[in-house]
Image (cartoon, rainbow, N blue to C red; front, side, top):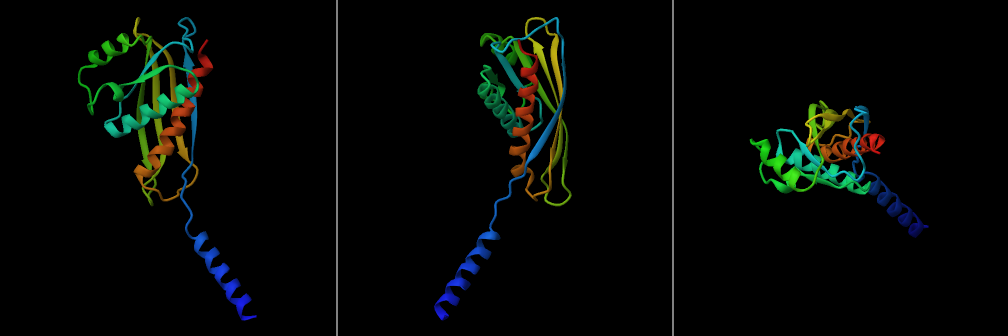
Length: 184
């Protein structure tokens, strides 16, 4: 009887210990509203250049990298500014335009994080508002725009840095889905 009681107590303590060591996994949902100019079509095989206009290089790098991954998964060839330019901010946009044209890109996708709200407790991202536009490198005209709203389902008390990855990934995947709705 003592042995079975010890065994049950050991199993109970083990289960209590396991249940208190769970991993936080903040999840995000992104909503999008988009439009395009039908007289200037773009195609899935058109190469695009991606640039993020946030103030932080690490934010730009994370956003551009997740967009590159999301586009690549869908078979769209893309290039990112943070791979080609090792600067936090680039003062001369003509350098980027020249590099984009040399790589054969027809369009530049400019993504601008607009507003970021964090939770009062925990500090993680509660919501992120972003805007993106696809601009023709030959004419300069905007052929596609999308507004994105990324929101957390609950506050998992993650830090800003820990919640940045899942929020950006959700936004990137939704942006690519919207882009593909209009490609020919």
